[in-house]
Amino acid sequence: MDLRQYFKKIREAESALPEAFPLLVSLETSDGGKPGRISEVSREVAAKMIVEGRAALASESQRQAYLEQQASHKKAAERAELSRRVQVAILSEPDAHSAWAGEKAPPPSTTRK
Image (cartoon, rainbow, N blue to C red):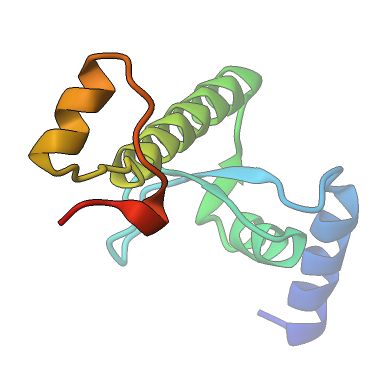
């Protein structure tokens, strides 16, 4: 293949892509590429992969499924982060009894040991 033609095809494919980070679906390749994997890549990488026959643009249904999956993963990560941040206060026995009885706990500077 002529290198000028190869890079011309890449430039043309890149200019045809509407987004800065398009979603691609991988295709099966002879060097072990697995089909059906969706990835968000830069416009330059997307154009190169399309020209080389390694990937194709994701369809609208694939795009929606990918975005929903990413939102689900984000929510799970946020929940995990919140559960990691749970604060626990250790109270001495007298402080715990006064807190449960509705009494005002003594200020931190005068806490009993």
